[in-house]
Every structure is written in structure tokens, then in C-alpha cells.
Image 1 (tube, rainbow, N blue to C red):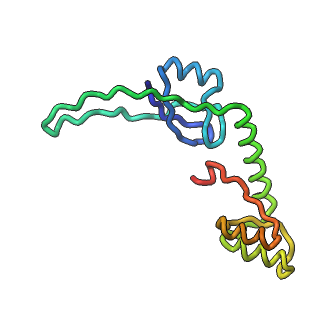
Image 2: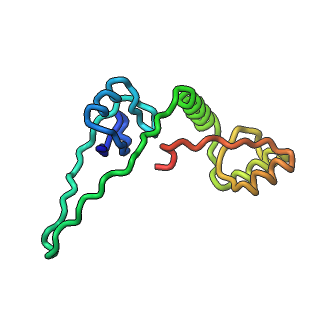
Image 3: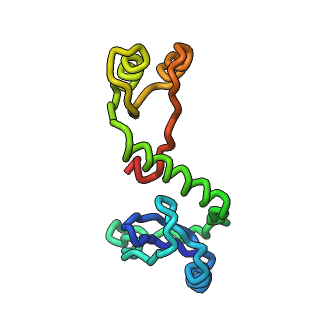
Amino acid sequence: MIRYSLVCEAGHGFDSWFPSSESYDDQVARGLVTCPACDSAKVTKALMAPSVARTDRGHAPTAAVPPAEVSVPMIAEPERQVRAMLRALREQVVANAEHVGARFPEEARRIHYGEAEGRSIYGEASPAEARALIEEGIDVAPIPVMPDDRN
């Protein structure tokens, strides 16, 4: 097994395991290796530093442990389509609504009760806060958090 550090055209780095270098080449050529952050199939190997055992500690290096069987999860086309739709939904909300951050529950109530102008907003709310808003009859819905949003 070979572990490669990979990078997509958008600069997202990730690692993946392959049975051989030929397997990596074949999978990349077929568009099967994609970035988990943006689904780009334009992936290349990143610069990697070799792992070298130290010998300056006065003892022999330990024997190499054979790799365990590893499977590389491949994202099926239906899941790619769902991710693309979720990404488009999030982009639509971000482009057309006001980000109110942690003030979301308070601002949603103000809008609902006519204390603030009606407008589309998004922000953060705990599950308990979201439940309380729904119980008050305030329409709220979670928007998906994409992998890039956590970087």
C-alpha cells in the first residue's frame, strides 16, 4: 500500500491510500480520485518528505509493520450530486441573506414579531435554540456546513 499526499486544483490537501502507484495513475486517469472538500477530479501528488528512521539513538530501527488492508472510500455519483446541490443551496443563502452570527435566535424572533424589518438572515443557533424557535412558530431550517466551511 502507498499513501500519497494529494492536492486538488483549488489547493485543498488530503491523503489517500492506493494498492500501487499504477493503481493511483489508473484511478486518476479515470477521474475516480476526487477532492473530499470540493469534489474536483483535477488532483495531483503533493510534495512529500520521506519517513526516515533515526539511528542516532543507539539502537537499531524497529522492523517495519506491514500495512493493514485499507479501502479508499469512493464517493458515488448520487452522493456527488447531493453534495453539489447542498453546496449550491448554501451559496444561495450566503449570497442573498444577512449573516447575523450568534444573534440569530434573537434576530429571528425580532423579525417574526415585527420588531425588525423582514429579511432573510442566517447565523448560528444551538439545537435547543432552534427547537425553541420552531415551537414558537418561527420558520427556521439548517443550512449545510460544507467541508470548506470548517477550514
